[in-house]
Structure formats: C-alpha cells, structure tokens
Length: 402
Image (cartoon, rainbow, N blue to C red; front, side, top):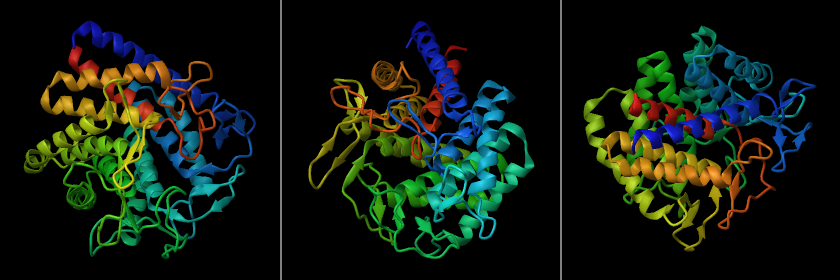
C-alpha cells in the first residue's frame, strides 16, 4: 500500500479511536454515581440499576491504561482509575483472594464464583496499568493474582488451566463462562486470555516464574488447543480431548497473533523459528474459510457436525481479524495481508460503527442490519477489542510511513 492510502486509513482509525474513548469517558458513565453503567442497550439507553461485571470493568481499566501509554497522556489514567477503584472496593474478595464475577449496581457481590477467564483479565488490566504508571501497587496486585491462579487453577497433570471455582476456590458443578458454553472443565477462551495476560505481565515484571508459566502455556496452546487444520478447539475434557465441533473464526485469528506475541516476548529464537510457519498457516486457513471476500467481512462460526454457518458479522471478530492480518504482514511483508485488513476496516466503517449513538453495534446481519437488541455496553461489551485493534494498527501504520 502506498503512503497516501496509509495516511488516509490512519486518519479514520485515529478519529474512531478518539470517538470510542470519548464514549466510555462520557456516555458510559452515570453522572449520579460517577461509575460506569452496567448496561447500555443497543438503542443507546443506559440501565441505571443493571448489575456490573468484572469483565467489562477490567477491560475498561486495561483500555484506558493502554490509551495513556499510546498517547503518552496521563489524563487517560483518570478513567482507568474509576474502574480500578471500583474493582478493588467491590469485586476483590478480601477473604479468599481473587475477583467476583458480578456485583449489583450498588457494588454488592451477586455472583461470587471465580471464573479463571475473569482473573486473567484482571491481571491484564493491572499489568497494563503498571506499564502506564510505574505504580508498584498495581504490579503487586497482578503478581498476587498470578500466584493465586497458579496455586488454585493450574492443572499440573495435563497442563493448562481449569475454567472456574467457587469463591473459596472449590470445584463447581457448573463452570460455564456463559449460557451458550458447554459445561466442560477446560476451554480455549480461558486459556487464550491467560496467555494474553501472562504475556503482558511478563513484559511488565520480567519475572522468571511468569516466563516459565507462559512457556508451558504456549506449549499447551500450540499442541493441544490448535488442531491439525489450524483451528482452535473450543472445549475440552480434563485431559484435552476435544468436546466441540464449532469453528470460531474470530478466535482462530485472535489466537494467531496473541500466540505469536507470547512467543516473541519469551525472546526464544528457536521457538520463533519453529512457530512462524505455524502462525502463517493459521492465518491462511482463516482467510480460506472465515473471510467473506465478496463482502470483505468475517463470518462468525461454523459447526462441522451440523454444517450450520453463522454468517453474522460480530464487532470483535472483524477487528481481531485486522490485528491478525497486520501481524501476518509483519511476519512476511506480504502486502496482501494489510490490504485485506483495510478491506475489513472499510466494512466496519460502513456497517459496524454506530455513527448516531456512539460506539459499535455488537453485530449486524448478512444484510448488514444491526441487531439493536444486543447490548452497546455490558458484561461482555467494553472498549477493549476495538480500541486495542485501532491503537495497534495505527502504530503499525506509523512504522510503515516513518
């Protein structure tokens, strides 16, 4: 791509990143409580008494910490601090350690189980906050939770991490992350985001114990979770026997770049040489199966057993594809990857961004009609996927035209 095209796209990305951050600094905050609404409907209506989820809060804290580093502007830490103070005051379990799943709008815990996925995002948030501020308290929080996960959640026999525990770290009958998930002891999504969190934590701490755990998880992820056709398997038995038939195209491409980032942070050249073609193969399979080249967007999911294709276009899937393709470009210098990434951005720009009420629609149909019943903000909808992608790709563009 030429410099003129890159500058054009950079301008669009910069404007939209600013719009996303502004939405979460203003529209998403209840002026009465000065806290984030637990839910904003797809029509843009805030629900004052909606419960608040640790996933949304930790992702907000991560986003504004990352924005402070990206812009070299400490003002963004003020918004990260809103999330951080609420997490410490209401989500943190002072008796058993770890962080609750949900509290009501006043901050009283309502779902006290410890989803390991959620603990990973809290580490991610605190590690990024430390990188933005050099706040030793934040790093200590992240490291304390790291050791908590290693003590309670790590499978020392088969490797990887279990899904969920009670508030006192006992086994549960129901470990599902959401209602649509299977009740299986291990899942790709939880292990992926521990990988993501430990990568950030090692970059922040340079702690050799974190590095050791990260290297073990890289091995598990690449040898157990990613199958021979370069797809991630979604759920597993305790000994890593696949339990599902879904191909999640967004998770496939997200895994490709998060795994590569984890490998790079280890500074193990042998590991990089081994897995570089592996990552490129993952991206190739994604483009062949999950990318709709006619409409320049990414499909959601395919069930190999029922042959059902979910062709809805989810917001996070599109931007994770952009990141994965930009990463593939960095590995190969093949310009076609960046061209495809920007084709997806053109689709997002035209159909996913809500230009009237702010932020992005959760998903649109095959006919590009938004599902306005989906949340604009809520337990699973925060600023993390889209703002992260924009920050990373702007950085990539800057390196190409500098």
